[in-house]
Length: 266
Image 1 (cartoon, one colour):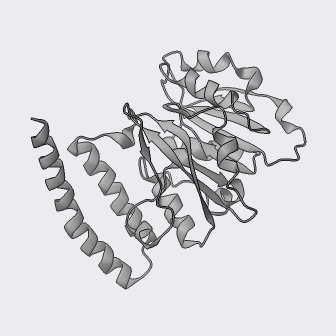
Image 2: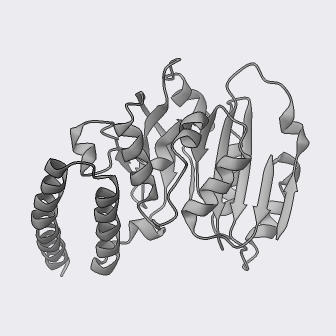
């Protein structure tokens, strides 16, 4: 295990401190852009924590170049992305936390400043737009509504979350490898937390992560996790019936949609 920390971030701040947690694993092609996009932000105060999964490709060497500007950085084996994110929460001192993984980066130098303009005293979550993939398609979150019980309505790369909420809900569930963010936000939604919509782009999400796989095997794994999220968070007989009906129709629908989409490409 390799660890270093910077005590400079212990100073007293008057504005809300934002912690950016970056999870990385063998991310040489992208991690430096992620780091630079954080360190170049106009928002202050700001701290960056990097939780690396014992990379072997030179990622840690790139991270080490910035050690004097990082609040914490650790490189060690973990039990998946959720475990690494929970480590970041435990180290964070910010009033708010943003999870910006090593495949992603902030849209511009004022991204945090622009998003925080929509933060009110009661805001637990600030949900922003993201740009996705090579074509930089703009995705806008639905936010919290009844449909959230079935499908997520926010993107964690576009979310600024109050640290106390993450701690109150116990962080991310390590049993999920892909849908840990949906599980967390579903629990947050059902807890009645306040979500503020910010109609600005916070970050750019590359289409290289495990959750972005578009082949049927990758989609099937994601759907299976979403189904397990439903099962875990189901507390009533009517909701169990609703979930059973949803999955009875949704999986065949997505299969047909996948087949038709690939036929058009041929």
